[in-house]
Image 1 (cartoon, helix red, strand yellow):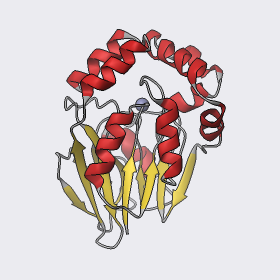
Image 2 (cartoon, rainbow, N blue to C red; image 1 turned 120 degrees about the vertical axis):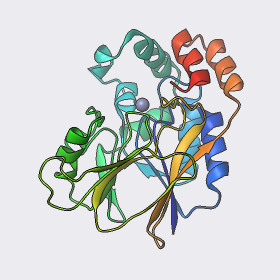
Image 3 (cartoon, rainbow, N blue to C red; image 1 turned 135 degrees about the vertical axis):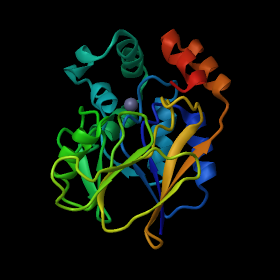
Image 4 (spheres, protein in one colour; image 1 turned 90 degrees about the vertical axis):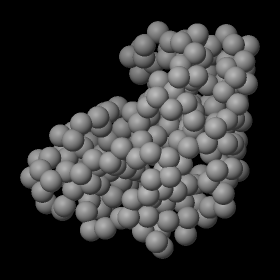
Length: 245
Ligand code: ZN
């Protein structure tokens, strides 16, 4: 069984289509939240995921899109894009986003947006934070997003603190064989990468082979940027797509 694991699509339909094409035939689609926010296609992205039967969790942008007051904590650009998203999205999109749980377990894997400790907000950016969260996992492995950075943190079960942590910053095509270690894996961001590579990022999880493979897919960034300009979305969110940062 091949599973495509996607995160932080951020209403970027062209990036989503490109990574789906790169992924090829899959048996399931899991997403890690921030389906909307920043990008110009919230309705189309949600409709596509819904049609594909994607299962996933809510991100902080998805929560804000449902009208939650968390929008007050967003920076100016994220807030402006979110206000546009709120004004624009169809009732069916809003209902789909509102129904997302903050965490779920699928086929023995934990799915969260931020972290097991704080599924909506915490950023896992250090081995110490990763270790504290691996210790809280109820499954051997979990997927997270939110940082928009492809990475894997792996550790022997029961290791104290961050001792023995192996951190992998996977390049495109990198594969990881899942062994008996515990860990947290980030597929990177489909719609707004921030690791300096502007291509859409995701992973393929092969449950039979016990491997995870990171993918990158080129897409028509300029077309997404034109759509964002037409919607008068914030300039920084538009320009950063070209840099992947
Ligand atoms: Zn995000």
